[in-house]
Amino acid sequence: MRVRINGNDIEVAASTLREVVEELGYDGAIIATAVNKSFVPRTQRNSVALHDGDAIEIIMPMRGG
Image 1 (tube, rainbow, N blue to C red):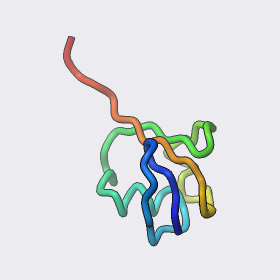
Image 2 (cartoon, one colour):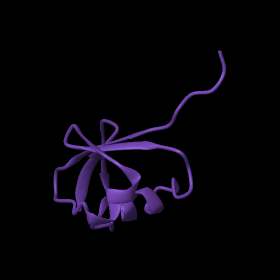
Image 3 (cartoon, rainbow, N blue to C red):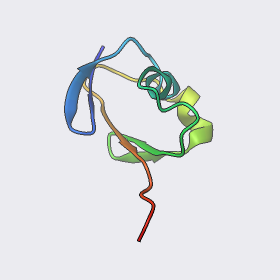
């Protein structure tokens, strides 16, 4: 399936947001996620089915000052 992640078109095998997070190597990382501009809490990532063309944002908090 082709989706847009952080502004880049990418082909993924995943069918849920949780699977995309794992596929991209973010599993276990502290991140915020959104699909089509709607925030998705970590506890709901497994229930969010993805569709061709969805826009996904994955944001990691920055440390330092």
